[in-house]
Length: 150
Image 1 (cartoon, rainbow, N blue to C red):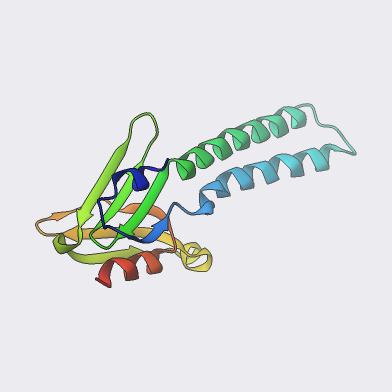
Image 2 (image 1 turned 45 degrees about the vertical axis):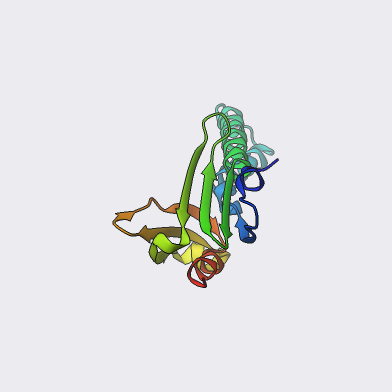
């Protein structure tokens, strides 16, 4: 059962449910591509350390892909009619819950790739404090719109 479903109060409804973006896999994809290109280039003329470099790239890419999958699987973002909930972690859980009446503004930071692939960092500014950004959030503009559309 997801954390979000577990902490909903009676009568509270979820307006937005999301997670981190699939671009967390991008470093693993690039490294795997480098490993496969190295293997293809070595096909005709094997190099002494070429196979070692290719295997190292593929192993590191696999580890990065598992890490990205774990981060996506253990991160939840939800906007309900009463609060914003951000949960990260499995063994050690970190959750941030901000009530709607305490939110002053919401900032969205997107890079060029973020605009192209629709992901970015969302920072919620509350009364008297700034909360840490929700990193690599999927659909950040939709998330911001749900937060400010009380």
